Length: 89
Image 1 (spheres, rainbow, N blue to C red):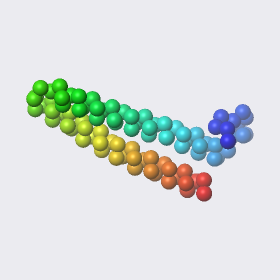
Image 2 (cartoon, helix red, strand yellow; image 1 turned 135 degrees about the horizontal axis):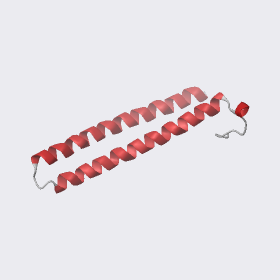
Image 3 (spheres, helix red, strand yellow; image 1 turned 90 degrees about the vertical axis):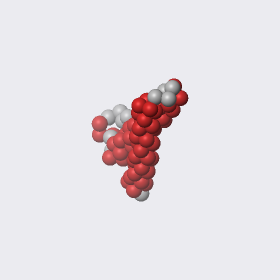
Image 4 (cartoon, helix red, strand yellow; image 1 turned 60 degrees about the horizontal axis):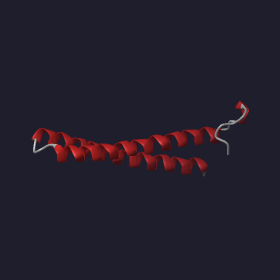
């Protein structure tokens, strides 16, 4: 199946769905990578905070939201994969 058809009439619904799914998967993967980077950077902030309660609290808050974001990303990936299964059935 060619994602980029040569002629407009060659574009079918399934090809459009494939393009959407591919883009969604790239966005979800990039979001997951960004969330992991935020967790790592926040961990480094905690180590370098030198006991400053404000910086530790800020970094912990960032980690909390990044983990919540990862949970949302995992759920979104599950929904996209379920949609793929239903559409291709």
